[in-house]
Image (cartoon, rainbow, N blue to C red; front, side):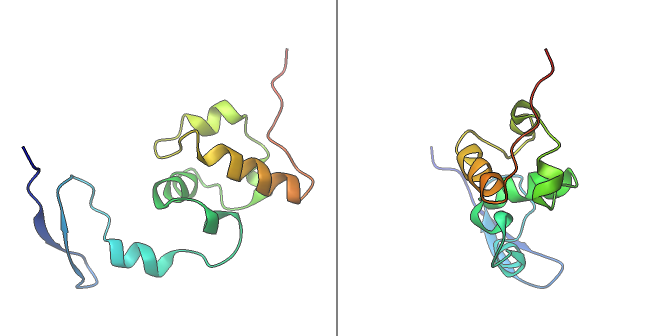
Length: 99
């Protein structure tokens, strides 16, 4: 059975249809997408997950273990290679686990 899409209107007045409970307006999301930096190469859910966790710079990202980042809702395995590459370009890496 196909899911039913309902009309939504965001606070900015954009009209859009969604079948999920996700409240994110696709127009607003596209307008706020960065045009450069490591957040620009990520999917919207991955970018929002990092922003929600307060991670907006590569230096902040480097203070986390990979497994901590993977636990964030919106981050999937396909995001990790992009994040690793961005860190490596700046001579950084994810925090190493203490053994």
